[in-house]
Length: 107
Image (cartoon, rainbow, N blue to C red; front, side, top):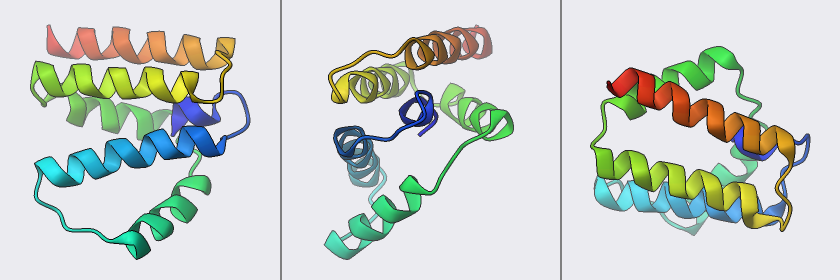
């Protein structure tokens, strides 16, 4: 969500990528969901504006995931950045910051 909001706007295409990642995580963690859940998550995500503390907490949890899961997250973050057809400098800078912070936490 932080990357999708970095440019000040969340595009529908970005939200679709985010929901795709969420459904992937639900599948690998055996969490059931339905279309109503996805609609609720979509509305919830549109209202989310993660701050630095939120981002740091997420990075701490991600650092405990396997290397493959971390790579999957980064690939999804890149897809969010690319989803609207534009790579905004704010999005790109935040992605680099996330990658560096993740590397620092896992080494």
